[in-house]
Image (tube, rainbow, N blue to C red):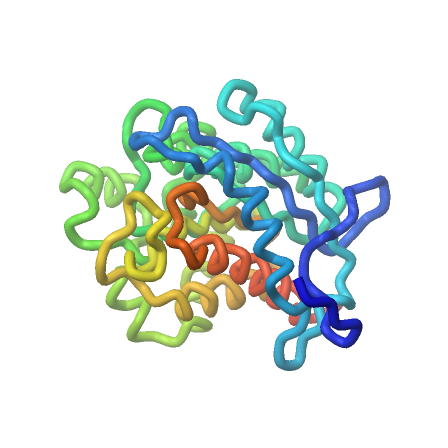
Length: 297
């Protein structure tokens, strides 16, 4: 890769030590319980490598001003979910924002529970915003069940907002389950019709009403399938890649968001140009840009 001293690249951040930082990356490469076969465990490394393709600069934002660390990967997040949760919790105690690199959507459980534990709260007072084509309320343990599992862990359904839910991608029974739990659904159509900042504010006002921190689950399959071929369950007609980036940045800009995960990307199934992994890496950078734009207290 060409080296230019005047163009510092993103990524390559140092290991997490004992010092407090602004943001921490954590890899949670869940894949073993996926409904469909996936190589999502390869994605955290692929995203880290893709970050080097991009500059650490956006208009009005220099990521070089942030202290960013990398806590490494959970060793066996499917077999030892508690260890993955503890790894995220440690990262949360040391930072203002934890960014978890999945893995399939099963990573959302240790990501959210770990972030809330690190913030010193329980699921009962926390909130959840999902950017996802699916409700993720299936029975059992899989990449289709993280929202239901978090509810079972104590999360109040009235503090859950699901953004980008797609027609013909969910069963009627799961839609009823979401309604019965009090989950607020912002449809895919509404996501494209309203400014990203308005959508993010609406979602966070609901999710943060319990006075606890909010976790954001970014299931990349919310995006149109043409842009994310490495997302097995993505649907033609999902939201645009640009709108996803806008939403991630708008959500991360709010200090009520303490953690965010990026899931459901199978790096081994991506297009030759790596477009899905590159979009995921850009979402990491958008989250960091949002953090940089937060008002300092």
